[in-house]
Image (cartoon, rainbow, N blue to C red; front, side, top):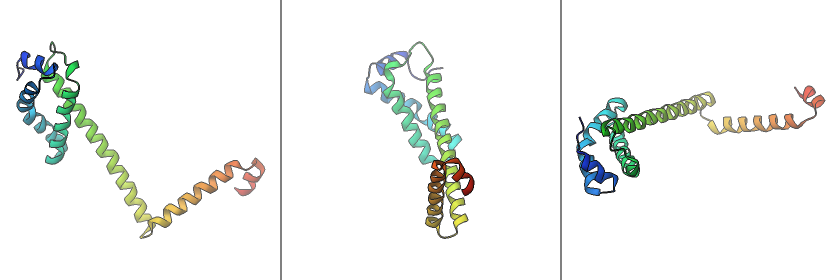
Length: 138
């Protein structure tokens, strides 16, 4: 069952701000609750919910009135949530790698990065050597 009438969705599609406000007020809590169920952060859930409604406003002209708005909203919300979670996984992996590097280097992270940079420069120089010199070096 749709929560907003078809005429409101038509007005939204035409760019009517009042129609958007009605849709926003009608669906905001449901969307935020759905997102919060996955990401468990109230602040991030609010921000992501704002992003969902921003996308609805930006893409309002492509809104298909003949299809279920609930399904459309659910799809946008689900995709936004999945993208957020994927981004969090990448971020956590990066942080974990950084922590591992810091632990490996002890208190001197700069030294480790410098050593890796020198190693990379040496590898590049070896690649440019003629094969007999590369063999000798290795």
